[in-house]
Amino acid sequence: MRWNAKYHFDPPKVLVGGFAFIIFIGSILLTLPIATNDGKGLPWLDALFTATSATCVTGLVVVDTGTTFTLFGQLVILLLIQVGGLGFMTFATFFAFLLGKRISLKERLLLQESLNNLTIEGIVRLVKRILIFTVMIEFIGAILLAIRFSFDMPLLKALYFGLFHAISNFNNAGFDIMGEFRSFTGYVEDPVVTLVVCTLIILGGIGFIVMNEVYEYRETCRLSLHAKIAVFTSLLLVVLSTLAIFLLELNNPKTLQPLSPLGKFLGSLFQAVTPRTAGSNTLNIPDLTQPTLFLMIFLMFVGASPGSTGGGIKTTTFATLLGAVWSQIKGKEDVTFFKQRIVYDTIYKALTVTFSGLFIVVTMTMLLTITERGKDFLMILFEATSAFGTVGLSMGLTTELSPIGKVIIILTMFAGRLGPLTIAYAVTLRRKPDPFRYPKGKIMIG
Image 1 (cartoon, helix red, strand yellow):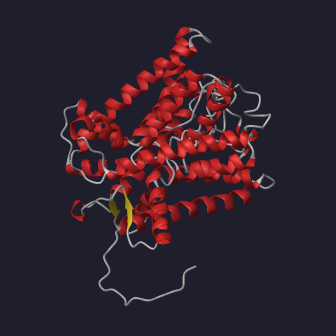
Image 2: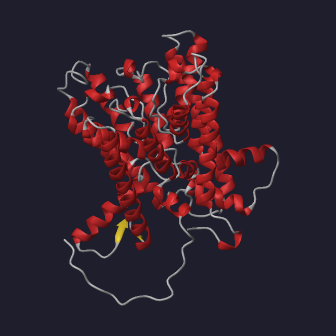
């Protein structure tokens, strides 16, 4: 990894421990009587599930957020979403700024690992800009949503709803307080809500490093290879997925068929954007056709871009693997994008991340087929992939999970948010270079 052994600490272990501690505190707060409308507080397992889902910015819920929780409970969830989306190290650095504290080298290394940045150079300046970007984007999104919601509810309620859903969707969390698991299904043909929420999801999922490069473009007049691949892959996936969902759902009487031409486009666009990895929806997920559900499983697995609030294996990982396959088919030795060569270490890492993600999804799906007997396999696979990609979309299984099933999804969400490699490095010993190399061997492939 990218840390130096002489500092006697492992950033992955610190990050895993930090997220676990935040989830633990959040779960305790949600068990308090003041957190729920019935005055009893959530049962501890449900509180742990909700706190994990919020901190890991997933959005899977075992109880309805809008009707179950008081204002205190909702604010706890909102705080967990914000801390989980930006990373607890970003928040710790923010408080260090307020106190005038100097950021140490150890803390810079933790920030580097947390933000998945390639270097610690300029990391503190990047954190400052992340905080500024977040406040500005969430504020603008909240105001626009509040203005639209004000036509349907009292002004103060509209302001709160606008703020909650702006923070939730920018952090790709997918929590909503519309009541009874409605999400934005009542606004499927509304261009304001659809486009504002889609923009929040895309900005939160593109990655802060990319946003920073775009911000500096007027001065530098250049974008890094990472930014180019992240933007191009994200745009391509959204465009192709919107078209595919439109064609697959066009004649479905439960989804797009009854809608106006504009509604059909907005519904397709929203469902193409939200699996990357927000979890809000304007179409009822169980009513979608099976091809659309399989497409969404793929989109959830790919997820957002590195250094963002989203999960999944990431767009750059997916692009790197596609590039490697294409180069192999063309008989080329190097994988190239935008006239730049991808080093083999990056390709190996992309392969490792993808295989680790597949292993987690397959394993958790297999376990859920055991614990949730009688449930449809596609529903279980959808749930496991949604948890790994920290998406939050569900075909209705979440509220029916057994206690063991809830634990399985909790672990999947946690692994998906931190990333399989971070988890692996946190629970294994420090890697040591091999003292020697074996002779080359050849095997048959394909």
